[in-house]
Length: 308
Length: 266
Image (cartoon, rainbow over all chains, first blue to last red):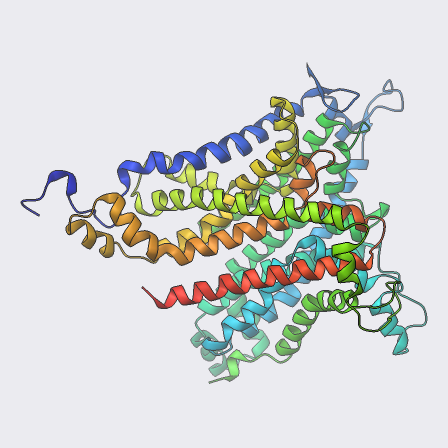
């Protein structure tokens, strides 16, 4: 490179923009830093403040929000504290609903992903496209559509009654099942895509070797395939479970009072004068902590898998 | 050997999967053309509810909401794509630098934090700094959470472009800016367009965060629809839903085609 003006030394492929990294990243740091990192930190602070009656907070340190979540001190707050189960039950129900939705997604999503990944390469794109289209349709509209379809005198019940399969309408709306179906319907593509990516990379020579050694299809699936594509399955489960846990639309539109989930509990704290901002912030903190734990466990397991 | 790839029943489950995904959408599309005023009985094919969407009692409210949604989506997608493009160039072409991992985590943060938590945190932040919730607060929130969605396709595209092209340009005395504008930007264009469309759809789709930071009297299409379906699903909602559905599918198809075309060129 002799004879070149020093300032115009050719850029090496990897770091041609090394000197302008700061200015290029500044807008990202500013936007996400100011409008997400600072707000989350502020939310953590708010969860330790005193509730103000018109909605909002008093800048007084208080553990009242966490106290309300975990302890019951009686109607007038003067009884010895016992464990408060109301909110823990809501969390437990949310975890259960999200888990069932995840299991449903896996039961339908794995065979679908497998089927698509074993198609000829030129048709896989079309199949994947078909699976992803509904995801791009507004989640609210999808949830409303599902409600319309499964409601008491909706098309599904009419069709089933018309076919003589049931005598009266199946009461689906406002049940746990409806919420699970809604979550399943909301996040199914999140399961199919990572599992598909894992199956596509799978070397079918392993299956052939197993078949040569007289392993049945299902033994091969369980003993050979599943351990190899596990990272894809775990990623898919996480991608369905995490948004399901804090979901608002599916439980709110498809469920009733008995299917109250974390999302609705948080939402309620910020609506009107009945709200309780510090409590809502505390519930959000607890939800975020759960999600972060799940993500950390996942990061640990993939790091271990990568090293092995 | 086809045998090991074939599992009995997997085709049936795939078909079931597609039926489950599409049935609700097809049903609502079909019923949007219902001539009857009741949602339960079928009164023949009619465009009645589409006319109602544009001229009916709620036309003004939904029209304003649609306008808000559209302008917010355009501005948010434009801003977040510009920000994400700069970030992708720095992350992929900037070599190793201090804070790279932290920056990567920061870009992905809107995807990691549950949406409802982002909604709560953003509302608290705006209340704290005393910014009245409304159009501007929705816009700020949308730009922020659209950044990772715009970033992912742009970074993926950039990763596939080798450094030779810019290097050749620089060897021929192009300035860094010329090499970027005339060489790198056209090469990464399909990723940028994909990122833009993705951000646009994500912004248009958002309900939870918008619902928290919108303030009283301000509506986007999803919040207006939500308010309306709380009182029961009316046929005009089905017509609006069908229109939105068609727009979304057009956008995704466009993004898919652009990406496929982009993949054929270097």
